[in-house]
Amino acid sequence: MRRRDFFAAAAGVAAVVASPASALAATGRRPGASQAPDLDLGDFPVVARVRARRALEHLEVLSDRIGPRIGGTESEHRARDYLVRELEALRYQVTTQPFTVPDKYLAEVNGRWQSGASRFGALGVTVKAPFVEVVDGRLPDLTGKIAFYVNAPAGSGPTHAAIERGAVAVVLGRLSATAIKAGAFSPTLDRTVAVPVIGLAQVHTEELRARGSGELTITTTHHPNLTSYNVIADRPPTFPWRDNGVVMVTAHYDSVPGSPGANDDGSGTVLCLELARVLRHLPTNKALRFALWGSEEQGLLGSRHYVSQLPPEEIARIKGVFQNDMVATSHDPATAYWLLSVDGADNATTAAVRAAAQRLGYDPRVHGPVARGSSDHVPFHEKGLASANFSWRGEGGPAQLEPIYHTPEDTIRDNISLERLQVSLELIGAAAYRLASRR
Image 1: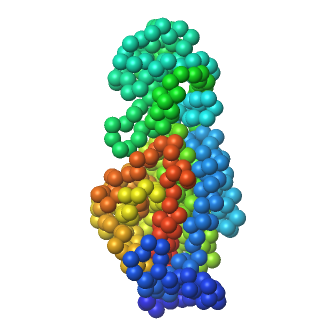
Image 2 (image 1 turned 90 degrees about the vertical axis):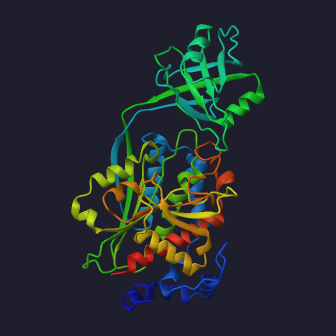
């Protein structure tokens, strides 16, 4: 280790050395590692203290108790308030950054399933009626009934035809022809209709088809004039009179309609919370900043707003952005931990994570860097900053996502691996701390 890094790590290591159990835990082979670790002094206070099970406690709140966190709506605001409370309790300087986002059109089915609603259909209404599946376009008398289509042809024709036959609501379901399951969606129509029209996720489509008949209660809601929020938590460097820049660890805390978003991106969010706990008292030469973005799922709206508000001198202070998006899936083939920079080039963040993987014995599981956008590292890259997204995906490439991505099945039970979350915590924690400790 370089001499200039030594002091920055020493205080944190002292706490670990004082606890033999912690020291032993840090020096043992890591979960899923191919070899024993060869840790530097600065790795000990991070690796010995991060705990996936502590992060899971936060995920139970976000994914199980709050559930889908739709940008700008009350559900996202509940998550925002929780994040603020937790970070303030850790003594970070926490600010929320508001920004406007587009209206949302949502629906509930039987008070249990969230789906998308068409903005061209009836909104703010509740319909209760038996449903009838329309098969091969053969339309029975639908007076007083809900028309249920599975993989209806594109366009508005089936919806209009069902309404002409008396349907009081139209439910459109999708069964994907690929391994990736279909999520909830808001149907697009060519003109306004007088009944609710909603788009179901695949798992609910399959359940309705298996049930065959019965009654549905559909409630549609228009959410106008929405404000989403970024949550920013800052901690100054150990030597605040030296401005050596800022290291950022980030994730998005919203999810798509219908999805509890356990892995996408509750996992990245709780990684940030756990690392904020572990790093809060460790000495650094750079400031630490944890940023949790709102409304990523609508087009990186939160991170783009944040970057657009930064003056040039603040942009210059950012030395690395570690974006964490989908860092804990339990999908069996997702055995590769990918370093994803926008242009596929190495930078300070990918190099730091690769080096951490070598020290911790995880190197064979780490792939890249390779080129991929589609997350909140993109706006930082566009400003010329070192940034990357870090994520578990299939060995075949970073586009190989778990089949239940963006669906109601993205739950803790169905899509979270504590081992992979632990690996993610150790890699990002060791890498971010190393970068923050440098002068």
